[in-house]
Length: 172
Ligand code: GDP
Ligand code: MG
Image (tube, rainbow, N blue to C red):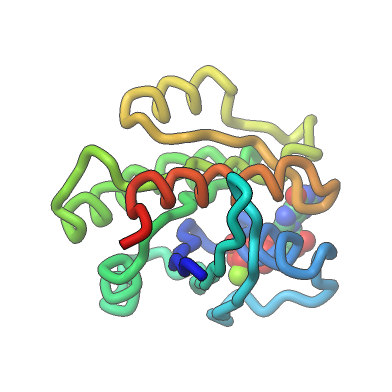
């Protein structure tokens, strides 16, 4: 079975763990520990093939750590996660993008998805669809608005990223 590594990156509190745990367990955890970094394994079927995913839910460190550098080096696909209710968390993504490009070197075809979270919090929204679209189009990244709470588009995010990884890293 093919196996890929996904790294989930983004500012603290944006909902990286909620998104990841919703995908893995079908529910969101009641208690959060923001400093915990967790590695999950999950199988997914994409294009008629079963694929094994290692998903690293990183701790929400605001600054870039050496550890992140190690993860990015070995990662095949990346989720750049921000909260639709927090403009600063969106601005933070470009710093992460720069680090990925620097570490991976090859800039054109790294499987990266931009993930906006907390879509259910309509009245608190701070980042427009257009702003996100312009950004993802500029870099050729996929894009989803999600809610881990309501389970909106959570599965889609992981399926699309897996499709991109299959294309980028075909079977040997
Ligand atoms: P992380 O630090 O990026 O891993 O963020 P967490 O997953 O720990 O989530 C931070 C907070 O945001 C928690 O209180 C979650 O309950 C809340 N949260 C996460 N996702 C959603 C969502 O889709 N909708 C709402 N309303 N709250 C969310
Ligand atoms: Mg977390």
